Image 1 (tube, rainbow, N blue to C red):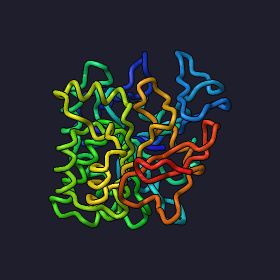
Image 2: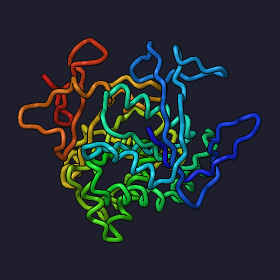
Image 3: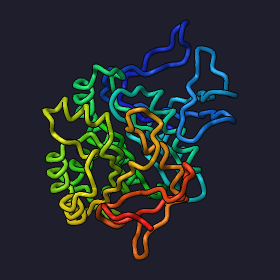
Image 4: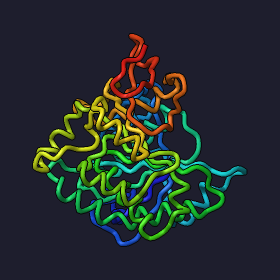
Length: 329
């Protein structure tokens, strides 16, 4: 796994011989390669947090790390005999680099995904009271995420590029896509498959972003859940303005708008979330993907509004994707 960040790196000290990253904002990107150990008793969707003395038998641990220039990171990804697929995770508010790294390790491990996994870690303060500061930090980070996506897209050794933005990270992803469109970098946009999970975005702002970006191919996929408590809090902090990640796909107006905008809006509220606020259901979706079934004539990349419903008693499936507001058989 890899991390690319515009956080400032702390110098090693006698107390901490391993360089770490702060929430201070760097002007250039740093890159690091990590090896993450996942414990044998790992539970799907969970992060087994290490304590003061990490034990790889019971907790996720950083087994190795190597700092490198960004160009060297891309060379490392592309060093195999075939074109390398890349998955980029852009974390949300109140998230440290370590938290983002372990969440990406969990999602990658549970999905059995191949290819390179990259964490883009913007300088979140990683505190509950840092919401406003984090909003400024993602605004600061737009050029840096644009730089990363552009470098990957222009390298012919890189295959499919999938971008997953969670919560406030979804706002950063959308602003970056908008920036790419406005500067005329359509070749980079054509290389991207984009998923937003519980995006913390004002609905009106999202509409404006979509107008600027235009349709994507495959369509932009947005994972929503009306009972997301974290987004309810965000709405209150933003004068009651609704958030995209809490939209109700059963509303016919939303379904029509999603299809007209070329967006695949998927309600994942039937999935158990690893957090009490129901804000991280995407962490479970990776492992459940193989058990998803489609209605006849549907494609997972269709634009429109859909509901991901569990049709069996088991917590892991099977699941079926049905048209928004329609109960699956």
